[in-house]
Amino acid sequence: MTISQLCSASADPGAATLRPTGRRARTKEATRRAITRAAQRLFMERGYDQVCLREIAEAAEVSITTVFKHFTGKEALVFGQEPDPAAELATAVRERRAGEGVLHALRRHLLDAWLPVAEHPGSEYLARLVDSAPALRAHAALLRARHADALGAALADAFAVPHDDLACTALARFVLEITVVARTQPDRRVAVERLFVLLAQGWQPPPAAVGAQVARGEREPNWAAG
Image 1 (cartoon, rainbow, N blue to C red):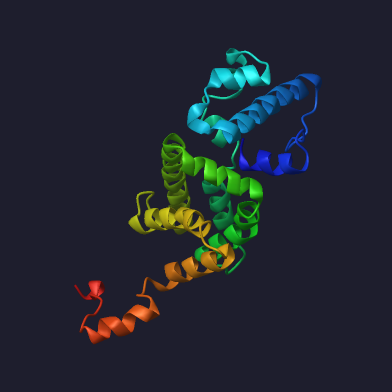
Image 2: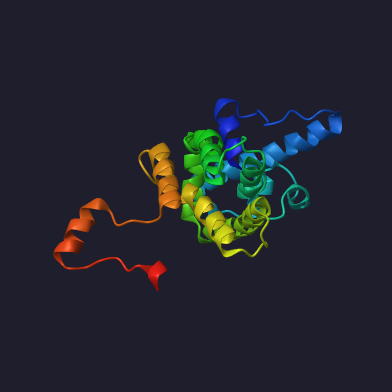
């Protein structure tokens, strides 16, 4: 029940993202699709926390052993085949155009690759499903942390610095969180653009707050001077 599966299922419930070749491969893929469709239906009807793997197996007309042959657990039915965002972003950095900066390459990738998927109704359903279940929220946070470590290492390689470089580690986490923040905004494209401006130029108080700060005699600390 990944985004890619939901997107293809909205047009053709029996469609696979990739058509496998060979009888055994087609049978395996058909079984996997049957399990994910059964899980999707049960999750939609009853909620993620109210469905167990045995019930999914029964609905798909397979054994629980067969479910475990295809999925490591219930969370894998939601996240199992999602693309690795860290790998995709790292590729965007490595293969950026001549003269293109790292931030620009990351921004371009999110706008070109993440945004169309995020705006698909299947993605909205998946986001609501994750938000509805504490176990899925925790699993999503764990995946983001792992992806941030991988992306941070790729960024460090791009700049020929150690993998624990603080700037690269922080940038990786900020970039991955952009998708989390932007998906809740009414205009996701504008949100992505604004968040990358913030990364490029540094955080500043909202314009409406500056006047109030001045009136109160407040100012932002000059950390660099310290």
